[in-house]
Every structure is written in structure tokens, then in C-alpha cells.
Length: 152
Image 1 (cartoon, one colour):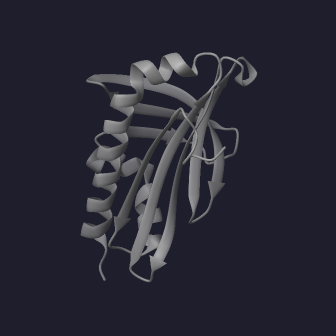
Image 2 (tube, rainbow, N blue to C red):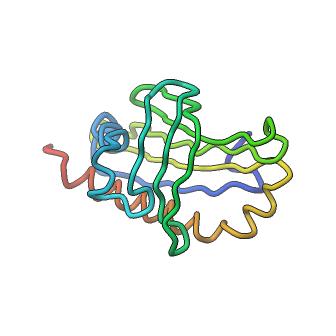
């Protein structure tokens, strides 16, 4: 699945004036999300692939608790969680967040979530705009937090 061409994918990208290792530490310091993340204001995760991830999100003016599974943990590079309902037939989605160094003090942050399965068109019809707004708010807040806390 290519997030650039997937028809039901919500994407965000930011350039952050801080090293990738620092941005990664901010991104995966889930205990501090309530201090800075307006979209995902709480995360409980075991950091084991297949393990539970509980997300507390502000989506379209509502506060929701979502139960997902950790699908990827590439230390220093990428983290992902998602759901597979009905073995992926009903809904299959993964929220991937990655950091990539541009140079020693600049990082490219990317986030995307692609939706597949029978319910995907409905989910996108109902939630694309709030997800885009939430992803943008979280990416902007991540950039602010990383830049403010980087002691370079």
C-alpha cells in the first residue's frame, strides 16, 4: 500500500527543526501526550507487536477511546497501530508515524492512515475531514514540542 496513491488515506507531513532522534523521543513519550498533543491526548501501549494500544482522541469535537493493536515498532524510525475487523474484511487500517533525518538538525515527520475493507468508504465519508484536522494539529504540536525542547 502506497500512502501517496491510496484512495482512502489521510496524510500529513512536516519538516521539524530538531534532530530525528529527538523528534522520535518526543513522538514515543506517550506519557507526555496530554501536555502537548491536542488530537491524541492519551496513549497506553505495551510496545510489543500485536499488543494492545488504547488511544484517547479528540475527533470532530468528541472525545473517543479507541482500542487498537501495535503493528510496527522500528526504533528511532517508525511506529504504527491499527485495527483489523473481521480479519480485515470489514475494516483494515494502520496509523503509521515516521521520522527521517533530512540533515543533522532537521527531520521529516510523516503520518498516514489508510483504510481498506467494506466499511472503509463509510469511515472516510464520515471522518476524513476530522482526521485530516486532527493529524495536522498533532503534527504541528509535535513540531512545536520537539523544537522547543531541543537544546541544540
